[in-house]
Length: 115
Length: 112
Image (cartoon, rainbow over all chains, first blue to last red; front, side, top):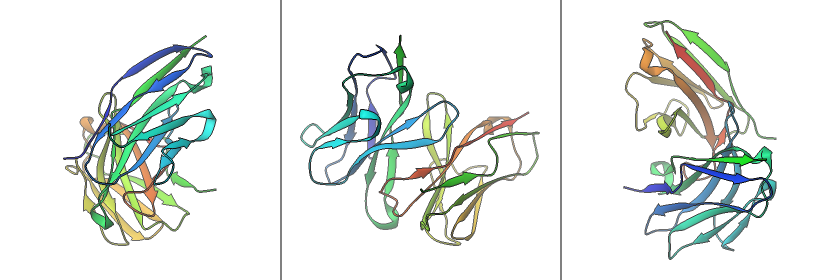
């Protein structure tokens, strides 16, 4: 079965420091990759997506992610975080085709930005 | 701007009540989804629909049913609410099951 693993459940970091949230997936075929952010008591908002092409993907709020096919990873990075980035982040993988396809979510990583 | 709306942000129901959660999208998407979100368990798919009147079970369909009579509307029904259905419920829509999904703001349901 396909799976998505977010390697850290919580990541504490100081404001203006860089951050990396790690995501690995299991798949031997082409996939689509996504990162979502969820602020408290809100729905999920798409940060960025990889469908094809350049392996470095830029998203909203200064985030970027790199698709690494050989390591089956899609880690999320930001060079300098703000207090407002405190939220839960979900990695997701779209796998399959047609109506049998699925979007599989990781368990989430809570990013805690400290002043 | 794309939009998915859910009928309630917060809902409190009693055990045994029938509960309806409504979701509406304005993007003309074929696919709609219902998830529940619990701490430490991430998002779990309850049901999804890839067309009007079509539905498929997700990973945790027990205790739930759904209805999709119109393309833009997808309802989740708890036939007889139980305390273990206290959770955050998220609705989403997409143009394909493997592409990005757009989420509503969520309904936090408490069953007492």
